[in-house]
Image (cartoon, rainbow, N blue to C red; front, side, top):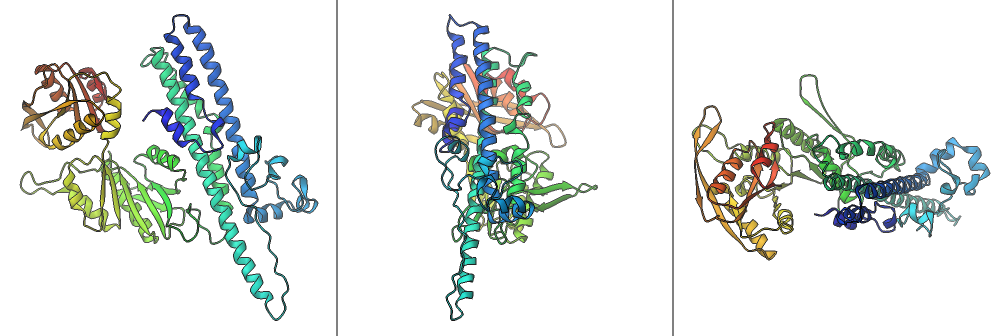
Length: 530
């Protein structure tokens, strides 16, 4: 998906003017294509606009943080904390009016903010249009006949519900702020990559992208402020309210996201897109290498998603996944979903010789035994792996084909042929071709049949490759689920070129690239790899 569409999709209502102006920066770079614009002129305009955007995002981020602090300070727990710490300020009313607590680092103007929908101007920019109900201070009216106690109990119950509502509103605001940080960070990284590409600096000593990413880590919106707000948020939690919830009481189970060490960046991006902060968890190692796991938040009656691909090191990541599932199941989670984009041991899905396990099935049984209720994968190596799970553990096998099809639609391809590098991938290649045809691109289908011979241990090499179909003069797209050692990809590319292919592209969902230098070698033999 193009980043511009991402930015449009994840902008929070009311915050539209606070994001990076990605379109403007792209238009400045496109001026290089004009004959009248010199590189020095474009550089001066681009970097000035870049600095202006950084300043705008930092300023808006700090305003939103201050507003969230003010909201948290005015929750019941926040009021009690600051009332205890600043009795003199509370007695005098401070600058925010009688009884209004103020955080020592919060300006008076922010401390007096109404928690309802913000008005125009700076309050609208910092609040983002997130409604936060003003707490009602209820008092029991003497009713006589012993009804004072009932009225007090009812008032306490209403007060508790208001506190919970305030807490959930703060939670949603924290999630939106997390999304704000993520989308702006991606925007600045993307635009610098475009700059390096336009200036032909990629792969050279003058490339500016890595240096700019290091600078981003020191900017205010990429600093540790979010972690401080998360801790402040947890400390303001009213009694009896879990920080894991984003839904109101009585609705569907609360959503929580937990990640292991396999791909924390992926988990952070998913959390940012959903606007749901990651549930903190401690995942470490004992001195002897054993995995130590502790979930640091209450997950009782929650809908828990564990984001943990079983990529290399496969065994370590698989064990983290199993123990995380066991931990949340023993903590009384309502449902446990394992999000496993890359399913380890998937290639061992049948008995090819005597006295070997069907490891893909054994992994499925272990996940079921640990209490996983549902599994979500991306492009399983073989579809029959879904059958290794029982009927009470459904498997969602998501396809990456739509993403690839939208990319290749933007390429100038002629006489397209979709190629499966082996017999097992024909169904995947056929689906890919159908996706291209749905976009108005006609394509043929071809398959390479390989014969392998053993090289000892667990290795093998391709002895012969035969082609089924015609690729002469075609732009070929090799479609596979993974690239590991890239042996099959090398073979398929060379075979297609020997059979008369014009250009060869490749698309693979899981780029394991186990051996060093595999990625660079792939680029050398292919016209394009994605």
